[in-house]
Image (cartoon, rainbow, N blue to C red; front, side):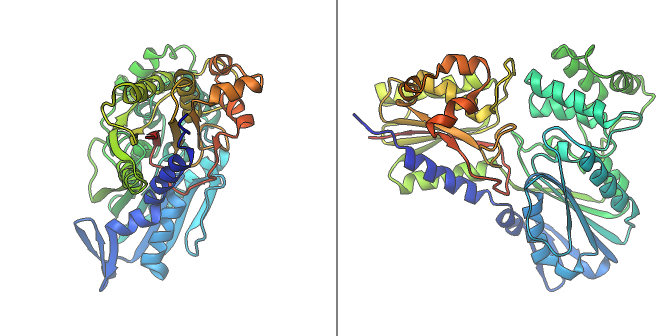
Length: 438
């Protein structure tokens, strides 16, 4: 019987994570030479700025700041970045503030207020560099008055449990915030603002990544209300949030900025680069690589079963690729939480896939978050193969029961099939692999 290619799958994932490194991503797009700061196709004469402020938020923003300090060093006047607990880096001139994610906390509010304070004092002669990565929306919590942090936490929790996707969650959060949806850029105006963005959003939409603090916002108060209605949350959200959205719809409260000036937004890294690196490594290891899509979203279990069905098609009919092969996908799925278990979308993906491939020898399916954290756990994801269910039965574990309780972590933990990378310093959504031996 064919052995499942577990080691190659993990090696391919490792290559994908390395390619998504924030330091390398920034340095690919930003350079300093002869006093000129080059950001993509734009050029800035550093001597023309009196102050350079470096601000940011996101799980990978500390690592991005390492590259910025390498480029600008003592030219940085002041810096302040909100990061998730434990997602740190060694910096000399930029202060890091650890705070809560995915549910914001008081540290996040204090940090967001400090970021707003620094942005607001910038003048026409100053440069504000803003570093954005996945997680920035939760890590930049500055509730619009009179909304409280507890009320924002409540609506964030409701949206997470409902299965709302990141676009939907951020459309709501932008309209109950003081910095999101282009409001930070407006606050920093008339300074020059340059945002370096590591995308964790399908399609790399600027106004969705981190809720777009420096990007013009395409969503409206009408959209926020429609999303809450879609998930039947209107009557569950705090009254202050419901009132703000209603007042926004009536025009009593101004919309988020639909245009920003003196601002450059540039995506320096994305899921696609991680997938390309995975394909390169798979080919080096002797597998035929095929990238299915970087745009995959939807309910985790259904997407997992689709991937398992593709694996079955290859094993049975040799299409759309012949073994040995490695099929690769990216994007980000969602989980509608109904149980009280512990896990995340990637672990749940692997559990659902395991049930469907238990009779397919030589197949390994893996799913992992590139940030190293899957849901509220210390795992990045999990992997499975045709032995997973048999081994689980020996441990007295019922896969369907654990799936129904959203308890994938405790299913994979005793099997040793959790993927634990620790904080990776990056965040470009998820990487999923179907690796099939010859």
